Image (cartoon, rainbow, N blue to C red; front, top):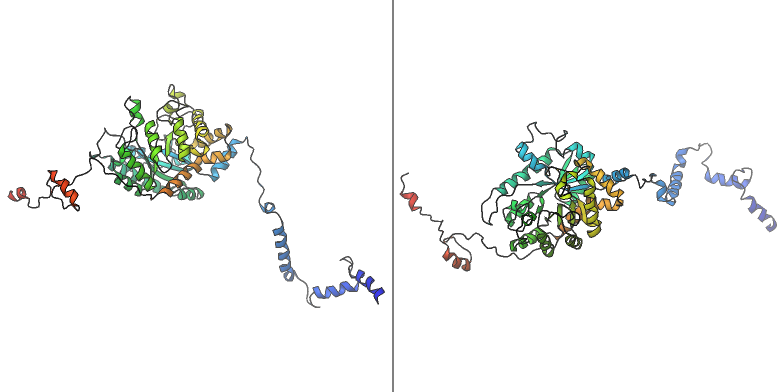
Length: 469
């Protein structure tokens, strides 16, 4: 009957705990197992899992992430530790391989040398770990000889090859500490694996024997930057030391233009530390890839010719390159080198960042090369102190990340992307001429060879045959 049907509907929706109503008994039959079969959690777990999953999806993701206590902005030590644990701190210049060569004659496996021990000087494993280092460009350095011509014989290329050999063997000797890298991707992977990425740079264009072919071979052997000059002019450019001695700043030579183009084509970084100011400007006007200063500073802060003037810093910003701050006392305080401190280094970094931007500054100590280092930066363990001081001076965590390693890795990656560009190479004056009777391929060469007086290929050997054997 219609009058009685409405109360029955109301009775069908009682509180769930009211089991006295028939409607609930009928629902229980549907939801319960047959008589005689006990209800267990095994039968209910699928529904429980589904319900839990739905609830988990509906909750904000942040509720499932472990809570992290925010770092106090004024706790520079904690901020530094956090930044350097996630971003590799990469130093652009350390001369340890040179010390291994001159102190140990390249011998590292006779028990005399253990890099895990606490050593004198600036660099060893213990202090690199304390300094939270993520990467190091090891410099392979050979001293300048007296000025040589483009075709003059020299032993420097041989010595450079030996330096590369020492650096590679040194890196391989400590596989749990170092990882040899020739790409920026490898450097990141090494840092994630807890190893110190180890790369090679050549400190002086004189070390390639004025040869583009030698540059290509050095690249194949693992070198990833060349300092265009050291403290001597070469076939490519004028050095800062030449200008300091009162001689003319001729900048980049015609052959130096070819050097820049070939370095760009290879994807090899051009280092402008040690070059004259005009060389800096000339290279920036020619290069089609970013350049680096592996260990220099800001000329406006300290008027040393090894530093980059402000117009060059602005050029670096436009070029996309990087200036890595050096720790050499006499570059930081010319009048009183013994008074140089960590604060002087910070002054250079802050000025470079102000003029060129935080995307164009890094660190290049010259540890194990310079005889004197600033107070507060006595060795490789002190990098965290430098980073903390930058933070105290107002640098953000993101700016410190760029300074520590992100800038250098970006520049390196940008240069790699330019690799393979082809340039028309110019003929080089003074190049080898061959012999008058060489089987030349081109008629024009045969015409030029008429003036060659050398006839080396005399296959009859008349003088030799006339001798008594």
